Amino acid sequence: MDLNQLTSFESVAQTLSFTGAARRLGIPQSTVSRQINDLETQLGVRLFFRTKRDVQLTQEGQTFLPYAGEILEAARKGAYALRQLRDGARGRLSLAVSAAPRGLLERSLGDFAREYPEIVVELTRVSCGRCLMDEDQAPFDLQFLPKEMLPEAEGLESLTLGEEGLSLLLPPGHPLAQGPVELSALSKERFILVAEAENPILYMQILDLCRAHRFQPHVVSRSDDVEAVRLSVASGLGVSILPVSQAGAAGVPIPDTEGLTVYAAVWKKSLLNPALRLFLPYLRKAAQGDGFGA
Image 1 (tube, rainbow, N blue to C red):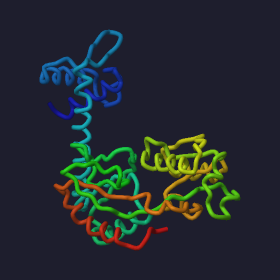
Image 2 (image 1 turned 180 degrees about the vertical axis):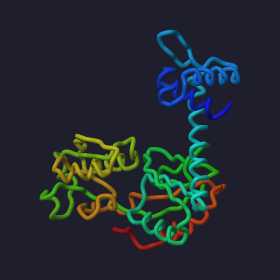
Image 3 (image 1 turned 120 degrees about the horizontal axis):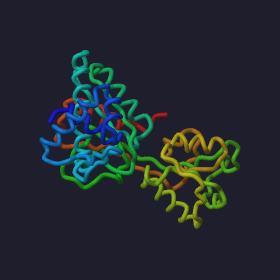
Image 4 (image 1 turned 45 degrees about the vertical axis):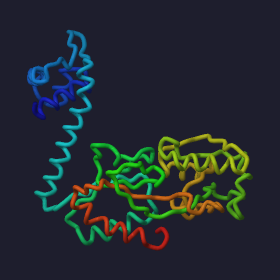
């Protein structure tokens, strides 16, 4: 089994066409067919049902497809890391960002980059809906996320990064922007929220907060993107509730919610990546700083 065979298999599975796969890969169709036949012989199973009219994955092919994708992705990441080494970089740090205190990433990564400019840092935005570091083949070195999403796993370590309250985000000129927040006055407002799948902790906090003030929020829109929520509110499409740092200067802090949102970082105890070992002291220093950056 080699990468060329796996690449052809993945391309045929995606296009359901030997001709289409050959065109995508820029190789003869006969080469694709030969590589698939060789792969099937090595695995001892048929990966595709082939007729003159169409191509379909067998059950064995469907089972094998995600594993082939993982192998190819690992090879691509390895090749990228080698290119970085060839070009002068001495390491690579891959960080998944679900949620973090505003300013903390800038402080920690800024100091780290100045000390270790040869280490390549990759930031990837991921959903708050799950802790990726709990998976066997976690593609990241560390994840920033709400602390309540931390799993109970012996193989993980975590660091509490800070806490903050919630803010009410209002359209420009809204009457409530001038005085103390009274949430019960929002019972007839249109709410635009971060989707539950994107941040289940925040979503439930908002619903519980509204219920505590004896109303059910009239949710007209849900978004996976905090920036889209802010833009919608600024355009006058509704109101929202966000963590203080995400609401920014336009937010009106909601009383009695201080410390409701807690952030953490999580990584595997094995610390296989030396670059992560170098980064953690900078993260701890930033987490001990006062408050959140602007």
